[in-house]
Length: 129
Image 1 (cartoon, helix red, strand yellow):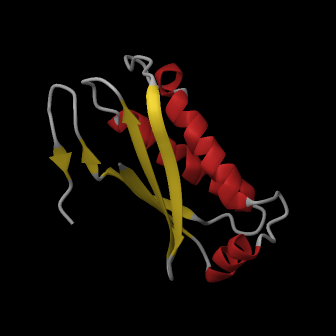
Image 2 (cartoon, rainbow, N blue to C red; image 1 turned 90 degrees about the horizontal axis):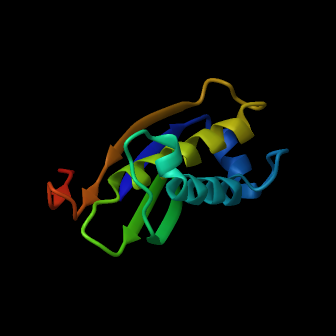
């Protein structure tokens, strides 16, 4: 599970909610982009191997100061999928930026981080709140 924030003016977040960004439904497109990025992670990050993912979920929460993006990725097997989760939130955030940049160019993508992982050589990791 990974997370990040896209900081923008409130008017952008309102327009995202209303679906009035010119390029289309920002959250739907960012969700698809995040899922695709998780699936293509091994093609983007050297030394990551292809995995048969069983779940990729991208969720959004529009907060007072930012858009919060969260990804949850799962697979069967002993390996961790933290790189896939981190890639998913990163690409989803970049997609939000791309779709909204005509309205606001000074958006910030911040706080990309791992919240939870299990599997792999290092076992379980849970970020402190």
